[in-house]
Length: 433
Ligand code: LLP
View (cartoon, rainbow, N blue to C red):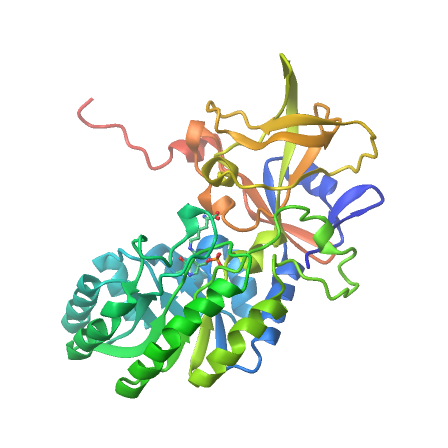
């Protein structure tokens, strides 16, 4: 469940009226609910309670330091994909010994940094990467704990850009090559084999692909466990959330526990499908959810700057753009959009909700049935807590938006809006001009 709901005609996040947030910090602004994130973490921990498990939050979904601190304080580990993410986790008080380092192209500098800090595991994607890590660890007189990422070749039924566990993708080692890759890893002098990892994709809305991948991998994991000191099996992230009718799925005021769920399939369905086969493996189980923890915990507030009619088409041009939230442009993804001040207008009409960026791909919704919109209206683009701010850019020299965290009846700025000066900071005038 999430804690966004209408109270006295205004959209609230926990106990905070979002009109107040927009008045104080302007728009576009991302607003996150700490209560929602912690609720999702608690529910997932509960569903996996019968397993020796660790939730490693996928930092790429939302890497604001306050979000990382919230999760670190609640005991989460972290799944990182760059030295920068590791740096952020550290700055937020996270424990490197609870970090798994994934990614197909770790640089020597990143490998050194992670080795020095003592990450829990490097998740390795290829034999050449194994060689790089072995060499760098040797030069530093350190040992590198590793897991190989298996590619189980299952179809997760999700958008092609975020499907990672099938044969065509660049990720992981094919199951047929896995035993040989482990043999090679065992021969390396500075490598400690400690785990097996997989991740089949993102925004997966059914339990079957997870269960199928585990079923395919389980006999191989058992075999590997008999040969090497394997301690953990990471099943990756990827659990999908609700994007359509996202607001309704929140089920009212946050302090009422309705027992609702915001994941597209319930946590129960997920746990029922994966826990029994995982329990039999008798290993520590890692999960790497990103979107599930933070996706429905965030909205992007934007204000309508102009209403434009062009032939039969009607556009609401808002002050947020594809540079602030690129998911609709990149994946044609659906985000529910609601007015922050509830309107009871009977008249709904179709409208494109677009940004000010000079591209036709700069849209948040096309031909969307919306209540009558007016200039100055405040809108909330729902389910924007994951892969929202982190994918924002300065395209069109637009400033990165601000971010606000809500907890109960309090809210605070957790990232200030960039200034125009920020846009050019770091640029130096070429001495050859
Ligand atoms: N573990 C690994 C190895 C991953 O590659 C990912 C996501 C995750 C965990 C977390 O997946 P999640 O639980 O959030 O689904 N920008 C895209 C999503 C890209 C996901 C990339 N990998 C989007 O906006 O939909």
